[in-house]
Amino acid sequence: MSAPAAELQVRRRGFSGLEGENPLVTGGSSGIAQAIAVRFAELGANVAINYRASPEEAAGTEAQVRACVRRSAATECETSWSRATSHLSKTSCA
Image (tube, rainbow, N blue to C red; front, side, top):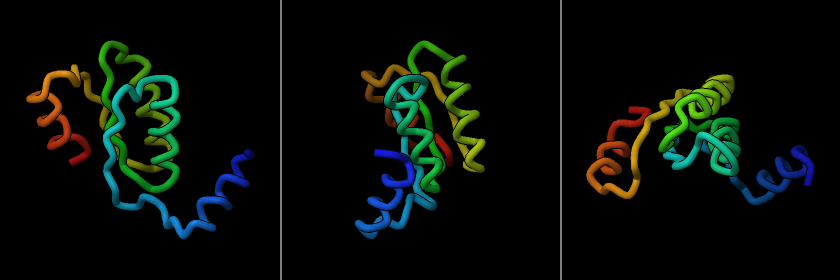
C-alpha cells in the first residue's frame, strides 16, 4: 500500500494521530523499530528511542524524528534489566 493510501486508511478509522503522546520504541536504532519511531513522529508523537549497542544508528533515527519537528531522546539501555527499563520510561522525552 502506498503512503497516501495508508494515510487515507488511518483517517477512515477515525485515528486522529499521536499528538502529545510519548512512546518508547525499543530497538529503535534500526530495522522495523526505526521505521515505527519515524512514523510515530510523523503522526505527531515525541519519541524515546532505546538501543542496546549502536549509538550511531540511534543518532540517525533521532535525527529523522527531529526532522519531523518532534522531540526525541536516544538512550542506551539493556531492557532485560527491569530497574533500568523503569528509569528509562520515567525519564525519556520528559
